[in-house]
Length: 353
Image: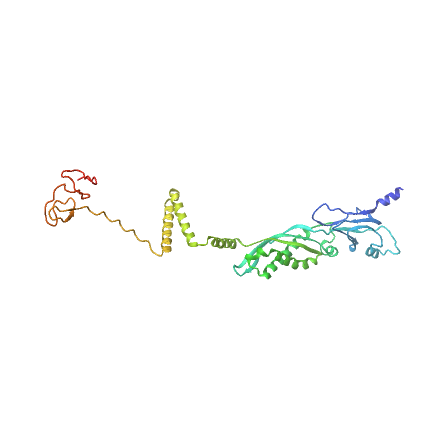
């Protein structure tokens, strides 16, 4: 019994693998120096594939399910081992489990700007980023082209290749679509579909397929974005003449509120803004500013000559028409109203005589 137990201890009767990570693509089953028992149980879970490799040569591939290993369900291994007449003996082989699930939320982005010729802005550079998902579509091709003989293979081994292929496909999509830079945001879905169709034939050569591709953002250079912001601001402002007047008035108000802080420079700015504002107002009114007319001087008080009746300035001692002497204090020197001789103040206007 001890010898039988020792022999059984050198044989593997159950083969399975559970994935505890989110990035493992291929896992080599650890034989630990043992051989596989013919009739052993093989369990392949959903989103997995089991591959038997005999002396470096790819043999049988098993999809999801539970199998009892025998010469009937291992035709390639049976041919390689030259098993005839149903001879079921233990055998040495490498077993690899391939993860066929989708690997989600993989990020991509342009490491360098993509050059593009735009009808409105001319030559511009674009940056883009987003996410994608992929999976192993052809196990045999993937093992031959990518995996090799490693004991463990993760998404890091193909991530760089996929990203560069995606950026190349997106660059072609943008260039061939001739979509204006201002309209790129409205065509993210179309660009994503075009990129997938362009990239998948290239990835198929590696046994991979792109399941989804999302363009999150395509950004323009900072200089172009500033130009677009200015153009947008001009459209929002509407009447630029009114806006210029408003800006000049704001500059004058700021200069007036900060006389000390700005010193002579602030005063100069305020004066310049005021001059510019005056010029704008003059242009808008269609005429140049003219100096205001001086106010008319008040008319001198007049009175009547006591001799000839001519109108003479009040307070005149002799009439300039007839030369007659006028009665002192007869009329107010300010308003010309008759006053009592010797009065010091006019009873009408209160003026001193």
